[in-house]
Length: 320
Image (cartoon, rainbow, N blue to C red; front, side, top):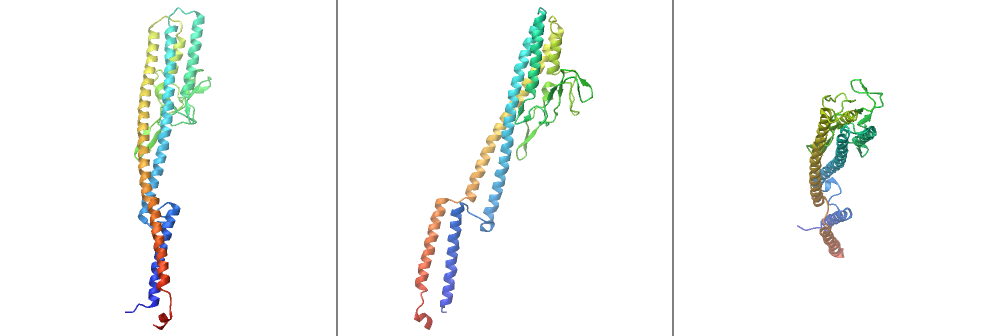
């Protein structure tokens, strides 16, 4: 069977065009740095790339939650440490004021210091991180503790006496999602450690038998000047109980800090592994692709040269 000139030209052009497309594809990869530029290039690579990018993006969101949690708990731990230091000063003044031998001026000085320490505690209890209050439960935009001016009422409608401290936060936690299916409550409800009897949150209940820090300080101020009695012992016991509670909450906060640091390291490791896999899946090997491009370019040029010689028409071609 004789191969006609037209058939030979058609076959040559088909193969030449095939080589040209391959060369164009490899040059596109060199230009973009990626193995594919559209889904039809390789559906599997495109699908896998989309999955990896989605997973990396989700991990970045978890990273933001983790880092926010670390900053949040670091601030909580710092504030709790400051509260403990202030309570230690309150205890020292309580012992000093209960001697029964203090002059009136001494009592007034101790009373003034205790009132200032109480105000300092309120300031610490209203500590914020990134513009949000860390001891408000879920009500992070609302200042958790307010000193009454005598015109405030608690959740039951009872007047809060002047100088009393009203809790405005909630008793719900602040949950952050750290990874798929893993969440952590990073919140510290101010009501948990101040245990005030005045609250504005109807979902919060407190025991009037368990006096909080502010009420205990008020009672200490009222008892100044009396000799060491059962009342003084009771007040010191209440103060020590509050300090123990602060220590417990600090320990829990420290455990959350460790958990968050572990999750942060895990997140970094997962993101690194997925990014590496994405690069292997989606990105080209520059040296390998460049070499392949040169080979295809040589093949294409050789095809042109061969075609120019083999397909050069002559008088004999037309006589066949």
